Amino acid sequence: MSRSNLSAAPTHDAPDRTPYVRLALALSLGAAVSLGITRFAYGLLLPTMREDLGWSYTLAGAMNTFNAVGYLLGALATPWLLRRSAPTALLLWGSALATVFMALSGFFTTAGPLLAQRVLAGVASALVFIAGGLLAARLGARQPHRSGFLLGLYYGGTGVGIVLSALGVPWVLERAAGQPHAWTWAWWGLALLCALATALLAWPARVLAASDAGAPAAPVAAPGEVGHAARALAGRVFRPRDFAFALAGYAGFGVGYIGYMTFVIALLREQGSTPGAITLYYALLGVAVIASSRIWAGLLDRHKNGQALARLNALLGVAAILPALTTAWPLVIASGLLFGGVFLSVVASTTALVRHNLPPAQWAAGITAFTIVFAAGQIVGPTVVGFIADGPGGLARGLVFSALALWVGAGLALRQRAL
Image (cartoon, rainbow, N blue to C red; front, side, top):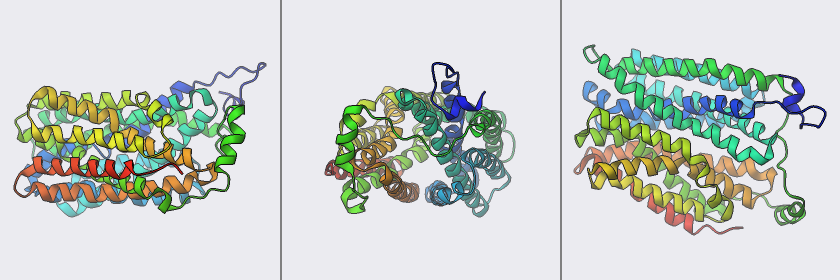
């Protein structure tokens, strides 16, 4: 792989032979580690760990609350780290640390050390996800006509991690059923998946590190839109009050979506779903995540206000409440497919909102603000849903709360106007 292939635009004399798609697919393993495995796989282990360790739902939910705290700390530290280290190094180190912290979770049975491991895993996952996203964005900048597709491949890696967890965790739990604390083997199995992904990430990291990365390429616009768009946004600065309704709506998303992903497997088990049925449900949710990257692109491009965020939040609320209202299997499967097909696009909708309404120099400030309120929602959601689940109505009432949080978020986002 020549240095010029990645650092310069292709020319007629030197055709660009960069394997963009393969690089994006390999980078997507970072999203698989950081979200699909490190964050979401815990939902598959929660019922078994809770039964074995005698936890309340509040404590079980706190595990993902602490993970979200770690993610926020990692997200806040990443800009500082990126000024001192290459994103490729941060990607590999973060993935390696996530592997270690996932493995350590199999060596403890008391709540304190397990909560500490979830914090540390959250920090590591933030490093991986943000560094991988930056590298995917740089890759897309070299092929502007396919940038959305390449970014979609990266974020779709979250679904790959969900599918691997859905297939691997029940298999390990079944084979370790006779062992004390059988769930510890599942943590080690997940750590092995993270280790394999880290090894495979070495290739795109090496290729991209060999290029003269520098700063991301400037967005390419059509000649007719350069002057108009630039003049319309020139001089505009990010002010939180201008985006207040969208920020509040995004916080509602953070509260609602993580409550569903933390507790839906436990609810399905309580309702009598078989292990095979749960594996099918969760694997299909992951497949929907993989497929979601292109479904909502038109919606995000059309709306410069909070419409996209509002509609996607509303759809997620429908998906979240279905398992709480019915045990009819077709509707449960529909819930998983709808949820998987929507939730990552909510994240993309806030990025699109910032890009539509602010000049490039202000994008970082806008995206940082949305990241912070999202993280705050993720911190609140699992513990609150767990607390509700410990009371009358159980887990079903907890998921009703998740749906209501998403619908409140949709209502707030609907009031966001284009600047």
